[in-house]
Amino acid sequence: MFKSLSKRISAPISKSLRTAQPARAFSVHEHSSVELFSQNGVAVPLGFVATTPQEAFEAAKKIGGETVVKAQVLAGGRGKGHFKNGFQGGVHVAKTPEEARDLASKMIGQTLVTKQTGEAGKECHKVFIVEKKQIVHEYYFAILLDRSSYGPVLVASSFGGMDIEGVAAKDPSAIHKLPIDINKGIQLSDAEHLASELGFKDSNKQAAVDTMMKLYELFIKSDATQIEINPLGETSDGKVLCMDAKLNFDDNATFRQAKLTELIDISQVDPRETEAKKWDLNYIGLDGNIGCLVNGAGLAMATMDIIKMYGGEPANFLDLGGTANEKTICEAFKIVAADPKVNAILVNIFGGIIRCDAVAQGIINAVNQQKLTIPVVVRLQGTNVELGKKLMKDSGIAIFAYDDLKPAASKVVELNNQAIESRK
Image 1: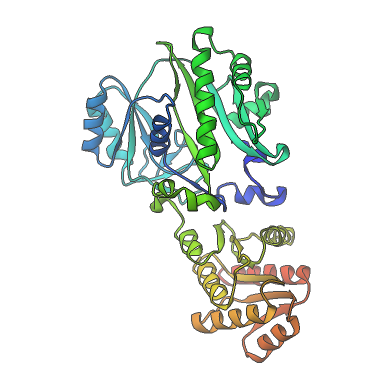
Image 2 (image 1 turned 90 degrees about the horizontal axis):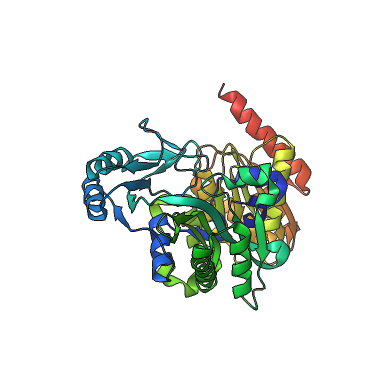
């Protein structure tokens, strides 16, 4: 996926966040995406979900002929991934129902590691059994939200079924981008132009156009932030089918997308993220060992950047949000401190909507209630900052307090390094 279009994060920390779940989007499994496509008139291959090897056998038998067995985990790069039991690849072709059952037995209940999951991987609880179609050409097609064009953009290529980022790096001209005026929506001429640019056969061009139009309609009505098809296939029998599907939806639109939220597989979501949502906290777990509690997404990113500048690695992104109070700050500490990798915590608050004294009291409560032994560095500025400082000073708790961010970041990195050295 094109990071520049789909990730709204600053360049210095984009690598750290690359494997994280977006803070304002939720994903659903491929089989759920395919079902949504089918419900909205988008052509897809026949497929069935299986949660046991025997169900995989029955599904393949029902389909008949060769099938594709796909591990259902919320991560890209499944085909090139590996299971921790030693089995290679999360996507395989089965020539018989017996082979589909055997493949499913090596996937279900096992942990799949891909380039997007990190070494922890994600457990596979089910597989998607899909009919194998004879593809004569594979295309790439996606609809994304593009900040630079203030709305949706169609991204497509005649080189599908492969790493699209690699295609873009090797030959940028192979990528077609078509911004859509969200007030007017996609026009028939837009889809026809793109189908021609991609090189669809004349006999299949109308099917390709219809597919693009219907996918855009689904994108808008479902509050999607991304629809990605790789590959969009032209079959030997003259059809245009979505052979794969990846959908992300706007987290802020869940109040009108209740049915979509029912499709979320909680087992695939970091439990810390789930807990954070209960308290209206925006949390993303990362691979570092310096915990961060910040109010405001922009300030949180800047805080992560400066930690990296001083040689540290953030363990998380955490935006307390505008509704933070003593209770939510305490809960935020619980979530951050629960990460066994965290050696030190940096709190960076600019008190405006939330007062600095409320922040200070929340920190004191968290340290006392949880009996935290992890060093805490605090930088406070804003409303009631002097009162906040006094509360922390009088608490008797060992808190490293600073007025400016640079020395605070330097100190938290120093404390983290000390913790690492002490364990050697």
